Length: 260
Image 1: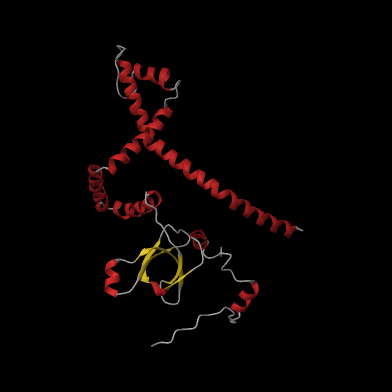
Image 2 (image 1 turned 45 degrees about the horizontal axis):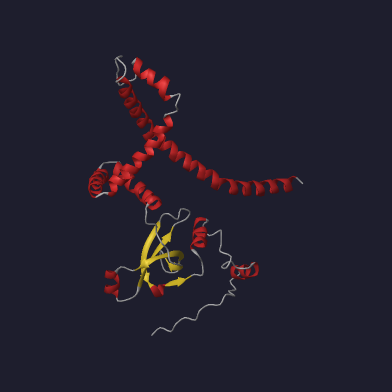
């Protein structure tokens, strides 16, 4: 009886945890991003906005004013205007407006040139050059306007002959490689487990890959789970699995082509 309860508790606890984690982690990431923007941008925008409010208020008052907020006028703006009207939220919204304006600037010709100079400097700075490129790759993958598009799922012998990996076809091969080899090539992205946002991009002959009857979601679930979540169409039955483990291969194999 005790073992039955322990088994049930473990099974349903893991099931409940699996159901709760995705929305909770998603909410946590969203809250973290909002908090990051507020603490690193919104807080400074709030100080600047209060300073502007003090400047405007000082036009109608004769009291002396300093930027550090130690004057009677600064206290007046905070206690009579800023806090009662909850203008802190205005600064939070303004921080998103500033990010939008910065994005428009970086998208311009002058902004792109200016940002390239900054990035070249970051790539040369000690310590920073070891961290910045990796972070940039992740953010570019997640936030890029042009998302990576996959046409179909294939199996390729990678990283060596005899080891098969699930890959996603992204495009045709490079023109220079195809002209040099004289064969039809395909570019394949091989995602890594358990983080499919990283992986390897390889180019191989079209004849060296096997098309799989899977959709992109099935392939990604298979990769993220480390092969535990097998697509239903590809899973062996219990009898077939036992035969395979015993070395009695019941699965039909393609006849090998004769070597010329």
